[in-house]
Length: 176
Image (cartoon, rainbow, N blue to C red; front, side, top):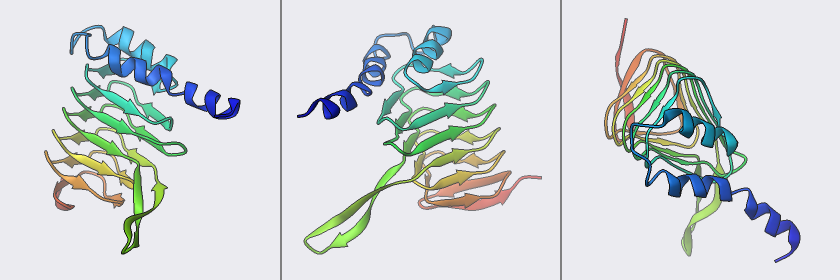
């Protein structure tokens, strides 16, 4: 391994250290310390963001979390560079929510997981994402959306103030 590749891997150390540290910190305590840790690791975390323990970040893509957002226990961010996850203000991300910015194109019969791809995930302000939901690469949630627990949100732009549910998630209702 040459020195360039060696230095490349050093970028991941702070985020993996945080993943380990979050296993021993009380889930709903030390929010200021957790924000400081994430900011030190290159994650843009707004004011009064509450990140619970067992939240994990994998990859070296960019992540930004808006003010007064809640990130629930066990939320995971899989963000390979150059992908980005952007979460607006006043959001509630329930436990076990998964952000997956990477995927593959369908390959040949000898290897169906073809060329790897990465795409951004955007979450507007005031969004509530229910427990165990999964947001896939290329998802864009406009402001005020509710994503039902366990839903799988696939690539696409979803209208503001809507309820998404199912696998794949579909618009079930528009709120007034």
